[in-house]
Image (cartoon, rainbow, N blue to C red):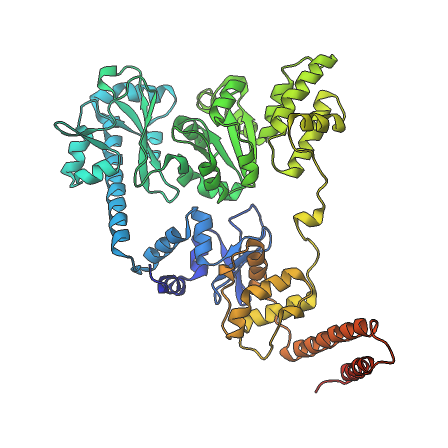
Length: 579
């Protein structure tokens, strides 16, 4: 894409209109205030500046421009956000030939999948060979309303029913194969899915990218592809990567952002059951292990992920399919476990009308590591020293893999309480096992929460709002390192008299502070007052330097006299009022 695409799309997009499509926005002085969609709140705390095309939430710190807003609310990359906003504004992006060809093939594959969904849905509701599939759904309590809401379908038992229907609709052979719907055999194309209940899989933007096919009792295995497999899912393709797609995320995304939490269950019917029970944050993996790609995808919307398991510990392990506890901590995720009552899955609980218990289980979810540790310790008799020693060894096996220092220390305390030993014993056990001993982390190493210097904040806020003003700044004008970092990030634009693009600042914390200053709509101080203060601050800084230098010089030396004369002159200048 050309360099000018971003600017053209940004200029064509009214940030107030864009945010109004997601949350309520009202005018407040020269700017607007909105209910932040990134955390739960009743009073608007998100400031939206139409003139600058920026937003910033003073409640949770989220901020950015029109591209950032689409990235965060739709969980897409910058190029994808650019395409979404360009389409919204009716702007044709500049693309090279090879990229256009790839995009064209992807669009054709997505269109093939889009056309397949209603064909399969109608077949489920009407075709004679779909009878067992309809019976299965009725047994789970899913009627036609659920079938239509989730666009559930049925793949016919013939070899090429769907292929023929889509080719009749004008879909090319290449698009059918790119979409993972057809394969080529000796006698031409044939259906990948046959005799299966079909769950459409969409990406986070809502585009169809594949299917999950479930085996149904009552259908002759000879008429089903891969009859030994309960589930057959679309293979990875140019539109589908199972390691970066979650079933139901396109529907659950707004609720996840609002609730600050996502719930992961094991299967497609469990997701549907969760939504029917009111847990609209539920999603599921698509026949693959839960891994970094899924965590990274969810991290765009929330920091908390709940894994909803049945009550069987083996089932818990199977659902997660990973012992890598580093991943959630590395990605700053709060990973929790909700154990379903009586060993039932969510679909079973909803079928029995136990929705309240399902919701309560999610609300009472415990941290994953706590769940693992408590499950291990519960296996041993803590009444004697041998049982406590074995329990400690098992618990430390989980604890020593946690890379986050603060979390590891807190869990070490928890293990000590559970097993009935002191913290030092737990730490010694970790060292013997080869783990990392916990250390004290000073708060200032984690985050600087000191109040910002008011004068420096006002000075920086002014030049961000009026980059062509008569105030010329240097990094040394800022004692506060946070404000100095903001100035250094925008100094190039300010020196050129340009309005800085604070949304393009690479460092997340610096960008967040810059946006908070940029969208602050309080009245700006007078430029003359700021110039007086700036002059006085610079004089004071120079006086401090000279005093320090005098302390190192011989009072009888010429150098001392030169420095002393400059010091006296500055002190007199400081006392002289400016006009």
